Figure 1: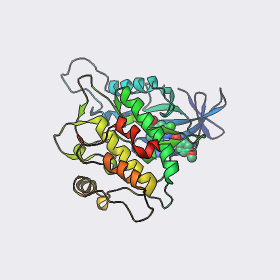
Figure 2: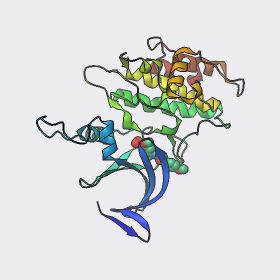
Figure 3: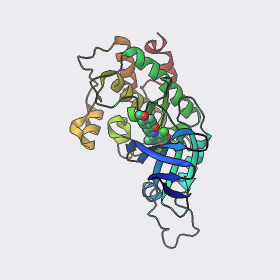
Amino acid sequence: VSIDNKEGALQLNQYKLLDNIGQGSYGIVKLVYNEEDETHYAMKILSKKKLMKKAGVFGRMIPGKKGSANPLAKVYREIALLKKLDHPNVVKLVEVLDDPDEDNLYLVFELVQRGEILQVPTDKPLDEETARKNFRDIVMGVEYLHYQRIVHRDIKPSNLLVDSDGRIKIADLGVSTELRACGELLSGPTGTPAFAAPETTMPGVHYSGTLCDIWSMGVTLYCLVTGRIPWDGTGSTIGVQAAIRNEPLKFPEKPVISKDLRDLISRMLNKNPLERITLSEIKEHIWLTN
Ligand SMILES: COc1ccc(C(=O)/C=C\Nc2cc(OC)c(C(=O)O)cc2Cl)cc1
């Protein structure tokens, strides 16, 4: 990876780095221009040190442990997984730039022109017709991921990108977990608290990753049509987790949400994962088939 500073813009191999277009706990996403194919891309810049900490390795082998298992092995496995994915409603990873001597890892994605679907909170939520079109794409994208035995674990509006033709692509599989062959039970909190299912906040409880994605899709759909999150528990993580576990779902007076949509969202936000609506039932729901 050669980095040089042509006319002030940072250059990485054939990519000219331009504006910052995304920011999150993961790092940053930059608009880049590929001089070879004269095309813009989105480049996600990750720090290997940060990834190792998240992967639970403290950057050096535990003394006495045999072998030199690469602490980034998990990360490289996830990236290999990402490269295999190919679906119109999932962001496309096209290239990974990795300089062994450098801390940064560069993931180059196809640019999804219009960016995030919605900032939450907003006083301009989507109308139901638009939300229905977008939600159909989200369902297809999640169905594809679950079919590939991947749970996303962080579905939320900022991870839903709108393409130039108005179609939705799901992004940030970074925290996704390839379902272990031995079934899909997971434990511990992940993703974003306001979008996390109640069962992920119970210590020691094992839960189904796919049913958690359904919950997050429900919170996301609620956001798209109301412009707000359903439970905000005065902003603290503990507060929002308690609210999610104990407070019933409430819809605001305005904007008015149709009976069918309220029914669908309520079934996705069933606090009991075993009673929660499944993906195939969502696809049959009257609000989506209307
Ligand atoms: C206004 O125009 C805009 C056009 C595109 C964007 C944009 O792309 C933003 C984030 N992008 C991404 C984030 C990801 O994770 C968090 C991942 C991933 O890790 O899968 C991939 C992508 Cl692409 C923003 C504004």
